[in-house]
Length: 362
Image 1 (cartoon, rainbow, N blue to C red):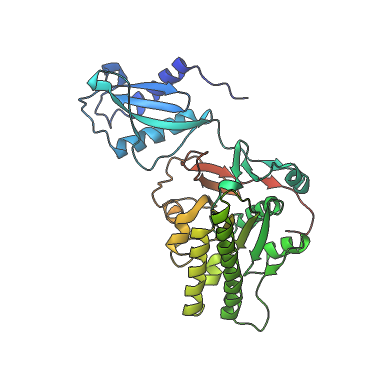
Image 2: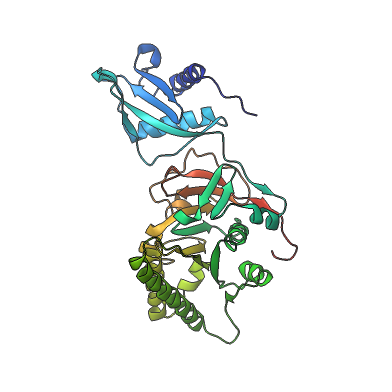
């Protein structure tokens, strides 16, 4: 079990780490010359520069402090990466130290769930709760849409199967499987219909069938909206449209059919939240050719697994520089961001659950 340092010890340790590593950046100014100080809080620490200073307080300085502190604090704390400098005002009348750079953290590091029996586990999960890691649970009532991105072999299908196993108990499912692969086998095992390609059938014909089903879902949304108009507190059962390998649908298909597909996805993403109609999309990437920008903007559970760098994160996390985030190696490892009113908006290292299930599903 990790033993956490006391506040004073942690402040001294951080000061020592920053004094040694920031020497050249701060042109020799250190805490020993009263150039800056550190204040440790329960949810992070504040770097407090004394102004006027001989160094520039900007995004570059913020990110350098992040790199130093994140490595120094691992594994007792995980710093939550910010896209830019996070300034906070301090309660003091001394104008020289009335502001600081805040570095939020969470105690410990991301830990993977190990599930010995997936069926038994899903039967014990609380209603509408999706456990992603130890101490990280998503409330499905607050989910609009989910995206899973990752290169081939990164573990997308394994992660999708886990989510489907949880969702089958809390949501109706419409599954689209262009590859007729893992989701189809899972659906057969759980007796859930799947929309998949058939022999002697064109791709445009297949996507047209998908569009018909999406149109039916849009009709459901409109009917539910009418019910909510009269009774805003009416509770609907969740309906989740699961599409594996979205990129495979949007490439090489008739232009009009593709535009219809994009239009239906956009309307469902924009209107589905209040009526509990969700999208669960899986793709190697989520550029503008895979899904419309309007769909990407409605995603509030973002999962990127596999190879993590600026290039691979540019679509789900366009403002994020992943440098300095400690991400474990292995399948199903990457980044996650949950955008709701319960979790911090920062991106966290993710280790997807490892689970064991009936032989033959995968």
